[in-house]
Length: 158
Image (cartoon, rainbow, N blue to C red; front, side, top):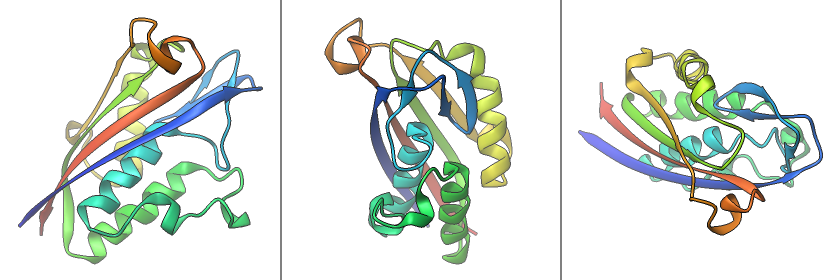
């Protein structure tokens, strides 16, 4: 059996000196506003995994009203979502994610993101795809107001 899930997340820029994307800290002139570390890529990926399992969304499992998740490393959320995947008899066939932003530039960090995501999900990096695009200065990402991410996963039964 195979199951597909998709996820999407957005965070606005705020004060700070870095962003965390795909589990990788990237120096930047702004931070992302969020209850946790604001890792939009991992948040979209968690939603995709939970969606493939028909378990709702990230907010249902890691609500911002719960102080345990304040400033949390999103990699911990991803690890818990992967535990849910395995507990239900599935494994990751592959994942594909796209970061949508004008800045910071993503390509110099893609290899590190793929390696970190593979480490957290306990899979081969060949199953992990991370890409980026801009919106050609259109919309909130084009105006530099924030970052968006979308992710798709394919799970297969073990």
